Length: 454
Ligand code: SF4
Image (cartoon, rainbow, N blue to C red; front, side, top):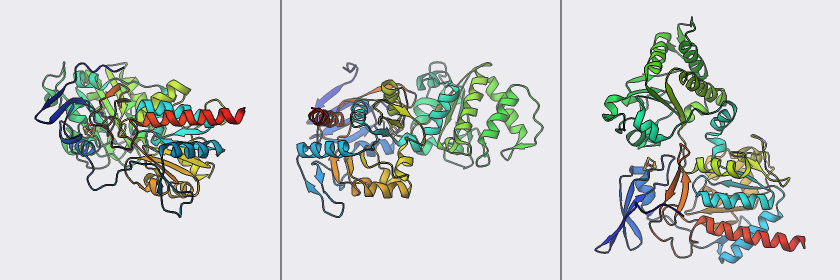
């Protein structure tokens, strides 16, 4: 199924070295990681950043779920149950519910998401994930005005102007600059950083801004105005304002000139842009600027996606239903409407009467009203360790660490599918993969619905 012939597993003196592993943490999905394994435990990690390394190493002292746990009432203590009982109870909860929500998916595999879509269709529910409260507006903007995208490999090999707008990769995507954009040497950029200009546009003096050739400390919420000003300048229009976004117009004129002079420019943006004033319109203006620049030179734009497979949820949902997130199957066919079928909103309006959460922690990240409703409805939570969400659950399903404990696949932030190698076996009691137990749950639901309809 996967192309694995280039990867190596070397065994020596009781140690196993597994090369070409992929870091399953953020959207960089760095696939050049090597792990040293002793007695089915990763002991050393090579090439990953500090956060990625911590994600590979076993979480000592933290409780690991290895058996399903159940409680009928949320006031009771959890009791261990068998997998068969757990899948039976999960199926009953989802079938009985009128509006079940199947939420999360950004930190599990493409294969698991595919099973999740089938399950949602069977129970007539809604499927959504973290994208709804992170890069949702970026996805909406792309749907409206298109996308002048590229692969990270193209950026590495060609870009001579890198712009980070409203993001701080030094803290959030630690290897992005060294592996894909700024410091790395590429086919046409042999001297790496020396051949690239780095511009950061951010109201904050971030760790990324400290490394920039130019830091434009724009006023909070003025991104839309700044992009339209740049578009006007690039088209040769006269701009009479002295300042835009608190920055003198001469600075914007210089940036416009640098953009036009670049042989290949790359704009990366984060939630600082996506969630600034006018949200999707700001992103649409940024894409419009990129499209204008492509009339003069070559430019690309890309959102810095957070979770390692958050782009995968958009991809799988798009190829199976035609829509990227917030997809509802209540009428037996997929419907899509942001605000109407998105997780935070449905929970806040108390429209959801049961929930399956997997590979996400909405209990820690959603607004209080949405979390309060999660506490009131039957909740199935699949996770590896205890989280605020599992604290609210009736049924806890032990998760498998996809891409470490099983072979799988994900989509990197630039939409490139990446193979995830298995490095160690999952602990005893866990299923071989999340896709595995979801497939079993689909079969239980199909059987129950078949029996019901006879
Ligand atoms: S940059 Fe992200 S994907 Fe790469 S090693 Fe660090 S945490 Fe992992």
